[in-house]
Image 1 (cartoon, one colour):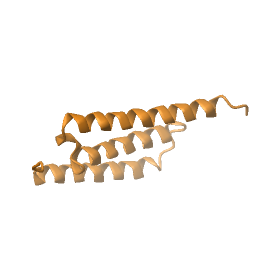
Image 2: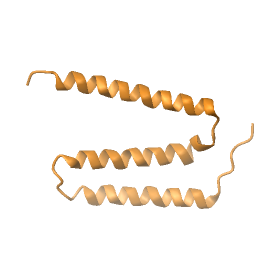
Image 3: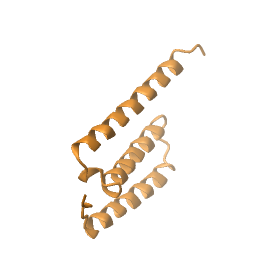
Image 4: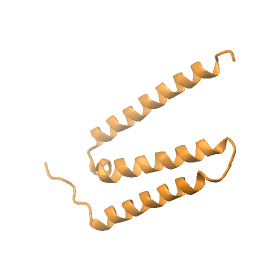
Length: 93
């Protein structure tokens, strides 16, 4: 099986994007946005994780079966998070 050939430009742009998102995370941590601090930080983290998986782990260049397995893993993670949040939100305070 042949490995996908990814150009250096793609790696460089991805690396630059990751650096920019890291700087954005750091700078936004100094701004008080109330309850949205965590939301913005999580969105940036998800974007960074997606970039890493897509480019550096070659998820963009894999077969359909691998993409289905990745989607199943993400779906399972979301199910676990929703069950945890359901338990947390229904507890008496």
